[in-house]
Length: 301
Image 1 (cartoon, rainbow, N blue to C red):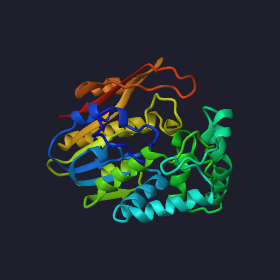
Image 2 (cartoon, rainbow, N blue to C red; image 1 turned 120 degrees about the vertical axis):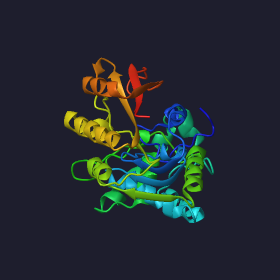
Image 3 (tube, rainbow, N blue to C red; image 1 turned 90 degrees about the vertical axis):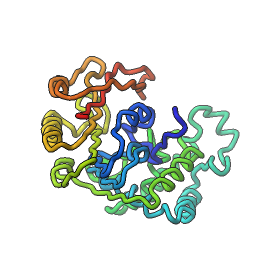
Image 4 (cartoon, rainbow, N blue to C red; image 1 turned 30 degrees about the vertical axis):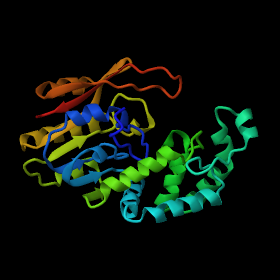
């Protein structure tokens, strides 16, 4: 991986970090307004040069964390101090600064000692955030960093319900945060939390604008994709056709094949545009086997 590629400090599911070098090389030059209806963790916008950024995600908690990062970019010391207060109060590991996990625990649980060490504090922090309907983005971020697969997941009652992960607030997290803070400083960035249709439809587009779309994948089997269906896919593809008719440049990331499944709707639709193969390297969390995936970037330029 090119060391120049910045990774989002959210380490979000569907993150394009490992694919970013390929994708970035296919983006147009001279972008005026950069639009991203499915911003997710933000790795793509963090590696894209534009005059203005209009970023959106339906997940309000995710957007609130992005807003927190932007607000903290001019006072990162306070951000890290606030994080440390939470880490110390709930007795969580902090390898970025010091190793407080006992050697006895490391010997007994060689591969899972972070999870064993952090479980009690993590569960108490979860209780803290679930007492309030409004989720504190800083507490939520700490939970994400220590949570299983670093995901955001809530039950039907709106309670954060992810178990502790075998992860830690380490130097990679600190580096990713600092890279984010560095990038967003003095840039014109706007975040919203709207349905993708409303976000795309309401914008007025100008010359040299560019829309990048990375929606949930119709045929992928992950938590992130559960609410996406054939109707959602069709609505999005029709919206993109409209963008094309208006002369707006776009790029769409998607999958044509996933193990034994294929996206026939996408395969038929993409024939009128340019499609580039993206070499992906996804591994299943369940069996550590590589998935048979054909990922593409579809463009109209």
